[in-house]
Amino acid sequence: MEVEMFNIGDYAVCPGHGVGQIVDIEEREVGEHKLSFYIIKVVANGMTVMVPTNSKDGIRVLVDDSEINEVYQLLNDHDVKVDNSTWNRRYRDYMEKVKTGSLLEIADVLRSLFLLKNKKNLSFGEKKMLEQCRDLIVQEISIKNGSEKTEIKNQIESCFE
Picture: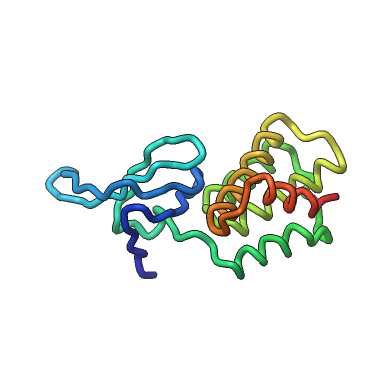
C-alpha cells in the first residue's frame, strides 16, 4: 500500500482522534535517524498529534462520496443481529473497530449501539462510545461536504427513527 502524501493545510483522519488539519511537517531526530512527521491539529479538541510521514497506518484521506453513501446505507440497514454478549465484551469489540479509523467500521458500531439502545439501556461506556462514533462521523462528513454539523447529525439520527 502506497503511503499518501499530505501538504500543510490538508485535512486527514487520525484513527481514534478524528479529523485533523496538517499544520506543519517537521524533521526530528529519533535515535540516530532523522524522521519526518506531520504535525496535525485535531479539529474536535485542538490536540496536536505527530505522525511519521512514512506511516502506512498513521493517517488517511477523508472519505469520498461513495463511502459516505455506504455509511448511510449501513446506518439505514437495521436487519442485523444485535450483539447480546456482556457490555464489556461488546465495548472491547467496538473499541477495536473505532481504532481502525475506518468510517464504515465506526458507522457499524454506531448502528449496533443505536439498535441496542432501542432494546435496553446502554451502559455509561456504551453511551459515551455512541456519542464518540456519532461525533467522528459527523465531523468527517461535515468537513468533507462543507455541511453544517447539526444537519449531518440530524441525517444520522433520522436513520434510526
